[in-house]
Structure formats: C-alpha cells, structure tokens
Image (cartoon, rainbow, N blue to C red; front, side, top):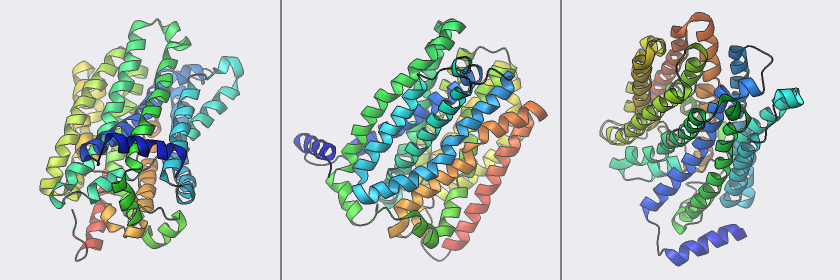
Length: 438
C-alpha cells in the first residue's frame, strides 16, 4: 500500500466507521464528472479554438475536420492506456494506477492551456496538441476503475438498472460545467480576447477538478468493502491477451452492444456545435446554452433509465433505444438547419434518447464474463466501444454533412443502431438457457 493510500484510508477510518453506499455513489459521480469535464472542454475547444489556433492554414471546415482527427487520437490511445495501466494495477495496486492516470489526465489537459499557436511555432503546435491528446487517451484507459459494472453486478437483483445508471450521471454534469464556462467566456469577451487567453481558463480548471476527483476515488478504492471484493477476484485485473483468449466473443458483444449509444453521444454533444458554428449565423454562447438545457434533459433521462431498466431489463432497454435511435437518424439531423426551434428540438430529443440508452450502456453484458476476467473484460470492451462508436463520430458526421447534407450524418447513427441490435441478438442466443439476462 502506498503512502497516499495509507493517508486516505487513515482519514477515512477517523471519520467513518463504515462505508455508506451513498458516499460511494457520490465518489463515483465526482470521478466520472471529472473525466467528462476534461473530455468536453477539449471537445468544445476542438470546434471554437483549435481550427483557428492550430490549423489556420486551411479553410474553417477543413480545419475543424483536422481538429476532429486529433480529437480521435485519444480513443485510439485509450486501449493502449488500459494495457499499460492494467499492468501497473497488477504490479502496484489500483491506488497507484489511479493516482498516475488521473495526474496524467489532468496534466495533459492543463498543458493544452499553454499551447502556442501555428503562427508561433508552426507544425510544432499540431505535434504538441496531438501529444497532449494522446496523453489524455492513455490516462482515460488507466482511469478505468470498474465501478460502473461493480455497482450493477453487486446491486440487489431488482435494483441493478438503478445502480448501473449512477456513474453515467457524470457525463451530463461534465457537459454542463464545460459548456457554462465556455458560454461565459464567449459571451463576455471580445473574439480577440477569447482567442488570446479566454479559452485557456477551462483547461486550468480541469487540473483542480482532477485533484478533487483523485481523492474521491481513492476513498472508494481503499475501503474495506472494495478491498474485500477485490480479494474475491470480482475486480482482479488480468492480462489483456489472456482475457481476449478466454473471453474474446464476449468482448466483441460488449463492444458492439452499446454502439448506437456511443455514436449518438457525439452526434448530440460535439457535432451539432460544429455545424451551428460553421454553417449558421446562430450565436455560439446561445447554442451552448441550448446544449446545457439538453444536458439537463439527458440527466433526467439517465435517472429514469434506472427505473425503466429495473422494470423491463437493461438489454431490452438497449434494444428499444437502438430502434428509437435508428428512427431518430432518419429525420432529426435536418432539424439543425431549422432555426432555433429546430435546434432545441434536436438537442432535447437527442439528449433524452442518449440519457435513456447511455444510462444502461455500462455493464449491460458484463455478467457474461467469468469472474476472473470481468474487470479486465469490462475495461477492454469500454475502450473498444468508445473507439468504434464515438471516436470518429464528429469527423465522419461533419465530413458527410459538409459534402452531402445533414441527412447523410444520420447514416452513421443508423449503422450504430444496427450493430447494437445484431450484438444484442447474438448475446441473447449465447445466454439462452444459461445465465439469466438482466
């Protein structure tokens, strides 16, 4: 046990005789909010800042496409980060792994705040931005703690959906804070001041939030209850190669089952901002406010997903949501060209669908994994689902829409919905007569 872990455990012992599940839930939400705040700060800057700062030598649409290509690097690096940090976990413990990963995440994010532009150092600006983004991706792989699956799999049989949705609350909360910060600076600074220094402040905030999140998550990691589950091998990190050999089929299912959800994730959080900013005369701060309203609806939908999943089953929820996302893909994108009312309708409908599906996307097929490989299997499937479902979504959606029109971006959503339905059907065939589905 490291000195930091001992200090946290001692502090916990002085103030608490036991572990309140509500405290664990708060710690989980803080940790996930921190990760998603870093994520959305970078995503918003990918639209508003980096095309001008790092890619001024091309037109705005191409610059944004380049920016989204760099954005995708984190999702490519994330599985590599999992491999590295799972090895650290096995050798030195989960506390050491989380400490290193979260400091890397915070440092990579705050480093972006000091990024010089292309006009100052040329292609060095592109290289630095890419390196910082890769650092974020590696850290996100290491920041996986398995708590989403833990809460779901160790919850009472009739409350698994409710516990599964708790960690997902961090996504809309992170978006709310990130959007509010950028809306404030965009709305209160001149364009020159915003591009000179205003956009950098949200990246400074990220490091402070990461420090708070580190201690919140360590309080969970070092609790006796968590340690007991670890000793029972509920959370035993296994080698990635060994996990793939024994659980490869379940990894594939776990990767593609939430694909509709993760494709929709960027279609309502990142891509709309790029379209509005590039192709309409709508105010940026105004649309960020619409995103914040949408995030509130998403938060409510995530909470509702817990009740609905306990009533109808998580796999049934994912299947119904995949069908709804397929329908959404057929008409909704064109609403972004329908003025303020159309934009608000797209965002609210999209966030409601996202909340209902995202709330149950974590751990929906985790029960397929054997106990020995559950922790690593869940980490790997999460990384791959984000990579295939969300990593390139903003780039693909903007590329298609800028050349073929908004409706073409719906094809990406539709493909994700089809993959989800196929994976869920395959999973049902595998588990039929075996472990009960939930």
